[in-house]
Amino acid sequence: MPRWKALPDELDPQVREFAGQLRRLVDRSGLGIAALADRTGYSKTSWERYLNGRLLAPKGAIVALAEVTGTNPVHLTTMWELAERAWSRSEMRHDMTMEAIRISQARAALGEFGGPAQATQTKPAKPAKQTRPAKQARVQGPTVPPQATAPSVDQFGPAPVLSPQEPPRGAVPGGGGGRRRLLMFGAGALGAILIIAIGFFVLDGKGGGGAEAGKSPSPSASAPQLPEGVKCVGAGCGGKDPEVMNCGGALAQNSTEAVIGTVTVQVRYSKTCKAAWGRIQGAAPGDVVRLQKGAASSKKGTVSSADTDAYTPMMAVDAAADVKACATLVSGQKGCTK
Image (cartoon, rainbow, N blue to C red; front, side):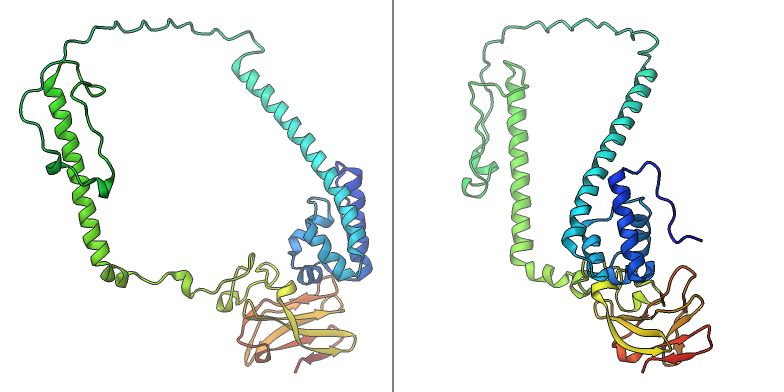
């Protein structure tokens, strides 16, 4: 059974050539998809999409692949740039095609292919008849003292002054009662604002110590700050896939390892995630690796028919020395790291 699936027929020739080059690099390195994901920091699912032509690999993944396979990153990046331009052109053509389809569907739905739609003619509304303003009425009754209804200018800035010669907008010309109601409403509103401001000053300014003391500490103050993309730490990583949680790649290191025949078994530890997992490399299909912490054991990682390596789920540990990785080979050989 071939290792790679056939590339999609609709791929641009430059993208197809670039995907083929990536496949040859991976084949020449002898790495399986799981090992490639663990060493580059990009997930197994992502690499399957990149290598099968369903998604163009980002530049960061290409640079990581060059480092893992010992390839000149400059040459590989140049080929990636050509493929990226071709991919963008293909997406643009696809978007234009889909837009044309949507426009055709919209026109058909609006009946433009069956005849022009009848526009509804509406007569413009007649302008309202203007009336001459009545003579200014004399304001009756006592005026409201400004010092009793408005705060000082130093606190809130100058308050708007309503000229007795100009009626407020919306008021009926000549209506002295309407102007008085408007003045009373404005005075009441300013008074309410003043009361609220004083209350805020008293409660927050002078009694702020009690309010601050009652505040609960922010949850982010105690939570560890994880690098972008990392999805777990400590106990939250238990039983999780290190690749999916982005704990591998540059964030992990080989703590201890042992060689069993031609197979290498390792303990991988991520200080950032505070978790470890076991890995087996150069193995045959059916070989198994487990991570052990005292009497506890992780789920096994089994080498598939298309790979030469496998890894276990993670275990939360304070230090890599707390665990060991053990391998059981189909040949019958067994062994663990120290």
